[in-house]
Amino acid sequence: MSTFARQKAVESVSIRSLQVKMTVLCDTNDHNHEQIDAHLLQYGNLFKVTLDSHITSDGIVILSTTEVDEFMMISEFLSVKKLLSSSVIVSSLNSSDVIIVCLTHLLSNNIISMIATMIDEAKFSKLKTQELVNIIVSYFVSVILALTIITFAI
Image 1 (spheres, helix red, strand yellow):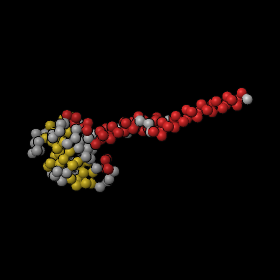
Image 2 (cartoon, one colour):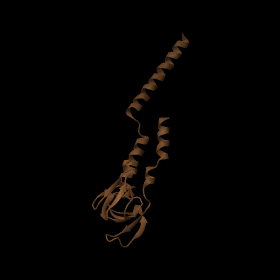
Image 3 (cartoon, rainbow, N blue to C red):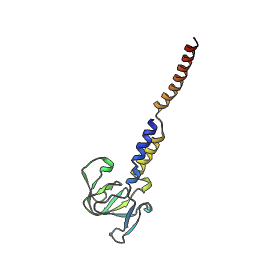
């Protein structure tokens, strides 16, 4: 029952759904905008994060400054000031200005993906204590059944 409950809880909150699907690829001068699928980003690509939108993946701010709401990752409601060369976290909400970010982690290797992988591993793994209890219970049931048969025979 605990495995079933754990599986249902994990399925109800899919952390991978927090990632942005589309992003705006640009250059260092904020020119040549091209909207692409976020999975096509490569290391070092520059992408634009507009006001009130989520950051596509982990990266470093290379143009402008802003305030970012990182509540999704750190459960903190306070906005964090991001200056040039500051790192930004995937799915954070850009709340004050348009920024250009240099990608440092692909979508398959960012913080959300690592958390989702750990959740998937935890979903199907058993605790050592749970394995030990299962072994003890199997012997306990056998002993109780044997004692019941002996008692009935007597």
